[in-house]
Image 1 (cartoon, rainbow, N blue to C red):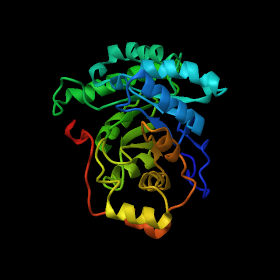
Image 2: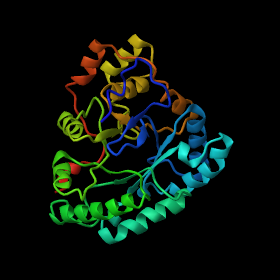
Image 3: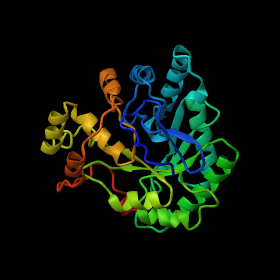
Length: 301
């Protein structure tokens, strides 16, 4: 793993990290969960590329890959960009958590996105659709899927592979038989209300980057953004609460994928060239209120 991603005080938009396979990945990306509709997708990606985002995060279950592909086909030339200038992440649907479904799922995502390869492909969820979380077959299915993904990685169809919503236990099982390819990224919910220190420490130990989602709290929920401590620090630093939460993540060496339907907020979410002082970081790192806003993978064996 590369050195501290915030060794410098400022955060250039183009800053990347080096994954454990040598590939470069932007530390800030555009999330697209629940962003649907051709016009919405186009407007968001246009604002993102104009501002300097170079990572687009999507998934099969988001049902927006095709609209993203259409938008990129039109917008990349507009901004004098080529496919290799951007980083596209997609994810395997829980309904496809079977080794014999992986290749078709990956190729379908590629087709919809209008690309011959994906920069990063993740197992979206540690459990298979329709299988009880307490059924140990989930671990067997994950292992088979990982084996299939390593073959696509070796063919360079996916340039890096990883996981999403994996706990320490899930990661230990994967690392016990990774078929020669370690996960490069684990995308999970992390924010001051749900910090997951054991998981982040484990990932650091095993050279796996943690990419945070729900950085601003749950969709349609403002409890984190309006937390009195967050609001107080935002006033002190004269920055929006969203920037405080995103900068907190970066200063904890987390990658981020904030989302918004507002071009102004998309721009604001990458204007992170400031530093949260140590005392304020201590406040955010030690919040007593803890709450998980998204689905809980602890229920999956």
